Image 1 (tube, rainbow, N blue to C red):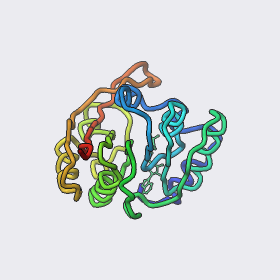
Image 2 (cartoon, protein in one colour; image 1 turned 120 degrees about the horizontal axis):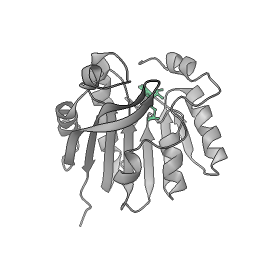
Image 3 (cartoon, protein in one colour; image 1 turned 60 degrees about the horizontal axis):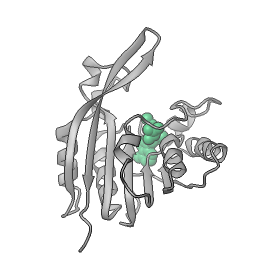
Length: 206
Ligand SMILES: C[S@@+](CC[C@H](N)C(=O)[O-])C[C@H]1O[C@@H](n2cnc3c(N)ncnc32)[C@H](O)[C@@H]1O
């Protein structure tokens, strides 16, 4: 869904759609990083941003859904953390290059927008900064559960590698891009969703 009004509509429920806990890949990937400035692009209802803030990160969350960000602000207040929330299109905006950690989790947009968002994510990194990207893998359509049933907004490791190598950051190091399994509870019991996880960093300057 590339229209903020449709996301506003989807978020117009009392309950959190994405729950309040962080995505299961975030804690292990962040373990070992020294908290600094973090940017959550397409942060939705804020579960990951709030978790990072509770671990000492100074967090900015960006999403184009005002309704999503209002719920995110409520989650932050409930967890007694302060986060900067910005209503903005993540495919646009001027990167600052100041963030020690940038995350883009489950952004589901067609390829041109995805490439623009990943390019921005890479250009938001400060030297020494880490980039984490997680999304529903294309394979999930046929072999996994959940996620949008639309191949146009899914991607795989090769897509992310290509997007990042053309992101406009000369010194970006792609550490890995791979398929990972995520356990989910469904009405029929536990099941497996197939995600794509990529991790990259900019080397610290000497
Ligand atoms: C599936 S949700 C994921 C939310 C969050 N990252 C998470 O993992 O809980 C996708 C989010 O992307 C946001 N989004 C989609 N396209 C966007 C764009 N061009 N600019 C900003 N946000 C966008 C939607 O508003 C929605 O909150």
